[in-house]
Length: 279
Image 1 (cartoon, helix red, strand yellow):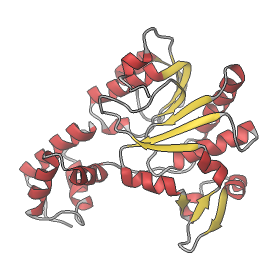
Image 2 (cartoon, one colour):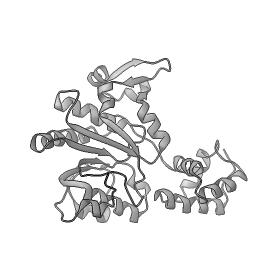
Image 3 (tube, rainbow, N blue to C red):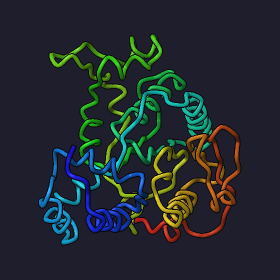
Image 4 (cartoon, rainbow, N blue to C red):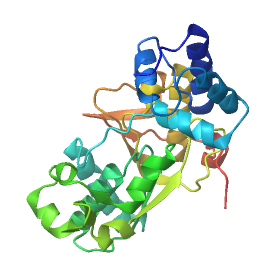
């Protein structure tokens, strides 16, 4: 356990968390920050490290974000969400053409890969006409996701049929890599949901945004949901953790129950509302 943070150090960390990631640190997070930071900074080095973050040092800022984010995830967490998303994508492809799906807090990749497996299963082919974008603020977590190698404990959440179809042989490390068909469907990219510009373009048919907004302050939560609504096709799906609430942004969506929402019809330009870059 590292030495306790001083009041001044915690206040500096609190301001930086809000500025860099829109994360609202409360007093109860103080011990967590101390415990996670034990291998990174201790004692007087804390002040030096915080000064580097305040000065815009990229490595120090990345380290702080990694300390602040909780990459707790699992394969097929809330399974019905993946059923709903895959069925909506199938309907979209039949009605209009290729479907676009976004996992907005992908962490170490279990969520977007679960989605890929569901799409392969529903479309009954290894190359469905879909695109999955998976983003996260944590570069270290994204590196794990890109490798697509998981422990037996993590893979135990997969149904037996999925395990047989989508998981390769164990490697020397004891971890197993997901099948190429699953990996091909997912593109990973770093994205901070609280940044002014999101480096994505176009509209989306399904957006997973689960277990991330709860860490943001209220103004950022609303802004993120407003921008997601502007990027969703009318009737497009937002998948939210069933225990989370949309707050003031609820007016932008129609609840289908159990954390599934569809976007209400709205006017205006998605690119203008979302502030996205067009490439």
